[in-house]
Length: 516
Image 1: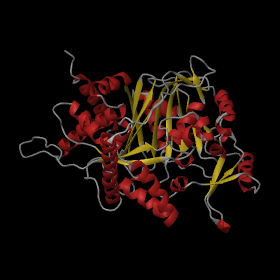
Image 2 (image 1 turned 180 degrees about the vertical axis):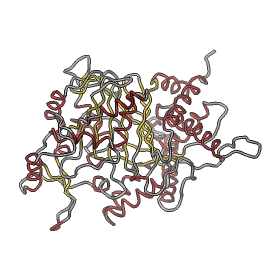
Image 3 (image 1 turned 135 degrees about the vertical axis):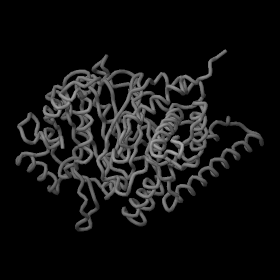
Image 4 (image 1 turned 45 degrees about the vertical axis):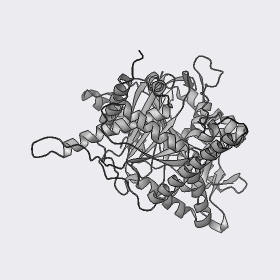
């Protein structure tokens, strides 16, 4: 593996090994009784269970070569001051003590990894391959490399050579028990500044929660208004009841149709390949405005269209009738996504200060995400806009439901009543019985710099859960980054899948009705 190569030669930063002195510092800090301790939350415990050892990876393309000393100083001044990034998990429940975070002395050099990939780069050049493939292979190797539990669960990998669209690449890997995507994105952005103004934090567009049907009604008196409020409440209650029943069925017996996207048992332990592609955010917004929907509705529709194209090809390659004609996918495929939903009072990416201080409605640091089981339409529509119409219809009903809050609270209740193993079993069943995970996050609207290094692109994802496919969308400036994480034994042509996504958004945009 690529990750093992750097160990053979001395580098400015040690890789995978700690010196005896630095290791003793961290281990002594963990053992000290006087150190600050904090119990692990139920969600943090979940991510330390077998089958749920998940990590978040943020791939950052940088606009200039990395100055390691500057990065080291920046990390010491910001990231390592955060309690989660300066604590280790102590999971043993000896002496009646609960699993807890224990503060420790952080040796930043132990968390910066500079791999020696010269041999791989020369081999790629000899084969006329892009250096992008070297980066892709290295990131794939990280998904099978366990994190050192004796020190804080994060590391930063610096690939200090040019690729097709960046002067260097930095890969931040963080264990999911440290926080959810919103928390970690906020912390990452707290480490950046506007490229045009090095003293200013980046601007994140405010994402207000789309109102439920009941919130759309104007306050007022009268019997008619009261009836409207009652009707809206009944719709909310009915949708929530249906979603609770479907969630319960999914956690017990309801499974997706087996397809070429379905992962086998134990897929969570397989290495993953992470690929990404940039599309225009303006194209997404054009479709959004034409269909009077949200960006998330458009992205769900694009995912539906892209997966339909991909499965049509895979089924056609596998199944050929007696006349040599390729067969189409079955018309009744049940394919669902677990959609991650931020259940904070104000959704979206918050400033780090808000997360830590609990301002603006009780926002807190940690894992505050619920699951929504979202059907993905697999069908070859003649009108590409039908994918958006169908996605808008499905997502619209989900917005009038409390499913995400129910899944989060029910998970907490199960852990409290039956223990963490029962909670992990529930979550594992839900993910194993669905096909993919889907998420979408809002990023800065202007170019930002990571400790003085301009960020060209940002491609986050997650691995370690029991699914063979994860689809993530990340906005940044006027771009939308599509990130696909796959088990390449199940999906061997991840770049073809990206092509299908890109072609789908192109066809959908071209199908926008022209105004007379």
